[in-house]
Length: 422
Image (cartoon, rainbow, N blue to C red; front, side):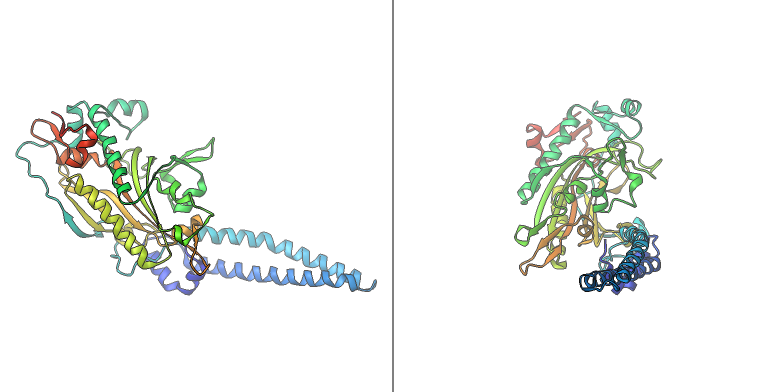
């Protein structure tokens, strides 16, 4: 959420952000509502001051003056009572527009309409050249009796899978490796629930615009979160921490759920786009300082790159353009791993800086050395998301006999084995 004062003073920048991020919001309507709210507040304040002044006159008023003062006090009170409902309606309307107002992105972020205009910044690793007929991850999983696709679809519906045998163990090996890796970087490790209240989703910016992606448990009025970002961001909501307590670096594990609304017919086969998955996410809460925030963005991005390098996967880093980055992002990079069966890179990690846009929504504050209370900056990036990361791991490390080579970094988590299957 943007500070309304910032919006008033930077109308052109905000208007440009609306256009470049393709956010359908009428800035003129927002500013008009803001002006009306300010005017009504001034009117209520003026009337309240008159009412108070009128009440102060009563003890010294003569018997002849008192009826007039009482009548005036009653009339002013009635006028306030008439204005307050209108003010409340307009304040709610303004708040609803502020929820949707995007953060102004960094000046050097690529301007583009969608993911086709994202910009490649770096490549790493070597794309494999197989001297045998390579298979995709679904064929590999079925050949080794590692997954249930059709049976789980019959039991649970589409985009639901079950991993079995060595692949199930491999998933948890990857998760444990990622948690240990983040701990080695100084992250506090935490596991968080998947169920959250509505306020937490508003706090991170997933609501109101992303409601169609979230499962709602109506009886309990709880929602299934699509990322640990939601509960982790809200942990410190409403608190004021000392500047000495930040930056906070956190590595969080949670089960995740997404409806994948609007993706009918897209990536329906295999492990790419499922409704339930597991994820290790990394976070930073830091001072309200652009340079410090930029440092942590690069640190989070570097950490994910090191994880992918340890997994011995070919990858690339792209900078996400304005039309693909989301309303709350100041800067965003995706890390994509090579998928041999598709002959292209697919997103496995997403690194985002949100400056104080989330913190204002979730009320995340700290007190600086000068005793001034400020909103934090928040950042997040994927460490690993399973089963998606299994796709490049299975396909890039497949051997001619159907076995899968285990990267050295994961072998200790698989009992010292250097391969599975075959």
